[in-house]
Amino acid sequence: MSDVPAAYRDAPRWPFGDSPELADELLALILAGGKRATCSSLAACEADIMPTVGEVSVILDGAGVPRCAIRTTEVEIMPFEAVSEDFARAEGEGDLTYEWWRDAHEAYYRREGTWAPGMKVVCERFELVEVF
Image (cartoon, helix red, strand yellow):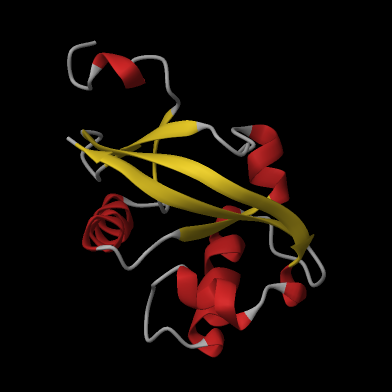
């Protein structure tokens, strides 16, 4: 696996979002420095990857190409309605308002099939470690 530096060879690999277009859009925000948080449904994390503080992940673009490495710095599980405006802004998406964040995430979780009022979400903060 020579597509990433040796230090990240065994790191989990995944794209942000649920489409190639969204993966590319969110990756661009990470690379530009505007996105330093993400929020996933607890159900999706339990079924796939539960983030842990200190873990490094390789982030893929929409074509599945490794583009950077991020390190998880904070993980908190809470009800969707308890996510703070500060956290929503740290995601760096849309117009940076809480309303935009809430609507976009509800739509995402509906597409994912996990949406329910009071659902638990995993709020993860991260830092960019290296760009490939």
